[in-house]
Length: 134
Image 1: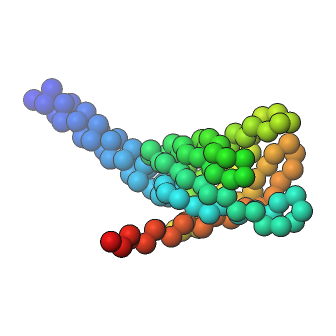
Image 2: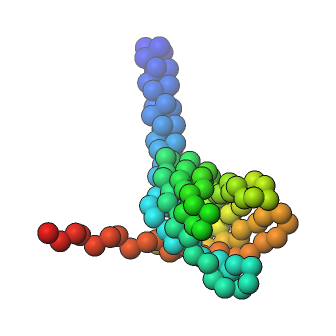
């Protein structure tokens, strides 16, 4: 009888633990998809790049397409907090752009840091492409 109670208690603990892990993964913001990423450029002009994110639980991967071409993106999402890095290659060397921010539905905002400099950024989820007519 005691063995059955211990087995039942262990099973309940396992089920509750798995439910907690699933709940934590479900509480992350959904940032997968295409985004228009905007921030001020060197001359103060707003520059916009196309950011595409894939999300697997808390893990983010993707690309950003800008004037330098496609650059890889890696990062994480935890709740509404979004952190990602864009690794860029330039004639002057390789750099990591560190983005930290928050997601709120179809928008994100935060700060980007590179080589001791920080600027604000925003992102809007790109509108779904209209269906193609025949």
